[in-house]
Image (cartoon, rainbow, N blue to C red; front, top):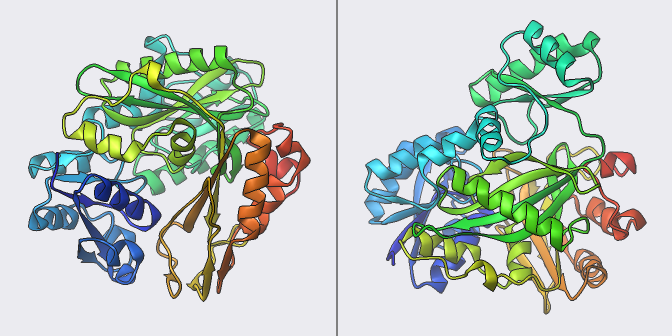
Length: 445
């Protein structure tokens, strides 16, 4: 087992990984920018290193400085958290060159899933259903030909993309060229790769993902699914496990496909295979996230596992702690992401947190990276905390989440808590009738 791990991230996920390190008796090293010198992830670590000024490109994306800090600290491994450098194959390679264990999959596995057109090709060859679509497209003329073959409406997407950046629905040929050029420009600006592709538009889909875990001893399992359909601007804000759409038979099929996907790329560690489902039991591969997910706590709550502890164990060479038969889903869990943003316009909110109160109680968990006096800056993702609850059934989890949100106080800035309350008290949400356009369809923002 490792003696010291550097956490190459910030905020609540850095605090979360620190907690797992302490469970295992491992010293936790963090990195921080000048803006985060007084942040909980810096102050609470066994050791912390300044890696640059506030802009993320000069600090948390600065591979050279992070590697330097890891080597200087004497860390044996690096945990990337999620976001930032977590799915950057060059960072994983830099860790390897420096003699550090990257707590995650191989650079090759990250690369194979990082380009969506390549991921689609691999999944099709593995026999996993994918949304009808195209390969990489270089011109509006190529896109027009592909769209006619697929059939309108289509989704235009960035091959190297994520987070919905550049993604647009195109209803007909008259707007295809403009959408193509816009998506291509945004892809180049955001990812340094202008390549785009098309997928068939699936109306009113549900976004369901499966947690997989593999080790270096040829073991690979799944830990059930998460429902992630409640989104704003293609970003998840409420997740739950299990999904109200998925029954035992569908769970078995999706889980088997997710494991097949992981094995197809020689995956090691925690990963998530994401699917779009049409509400009638049909589902299609969307993408694979080669890292820990923001929403991993709902899986932990219903399976009684600690995925971060297991990441560290597997990265140290140990076999998985569980077999597929050991995975039992019990109860229902919900997670609400609390963002520093206006709940109606989604504009980020900055400033000092003047008061802070989180819910407490049995079956309530809060993963947070903030404290009273913490200053929310414009430099980083606005995620402040995650409120997670578990109950014996979905109705009980909904009631507990409503109470938890009502008892949460974050003063000094705007947050999306009013929107979260509107959603979890909505009768359609309570009935489980949810799709990725839920917020827009019910005019909640």
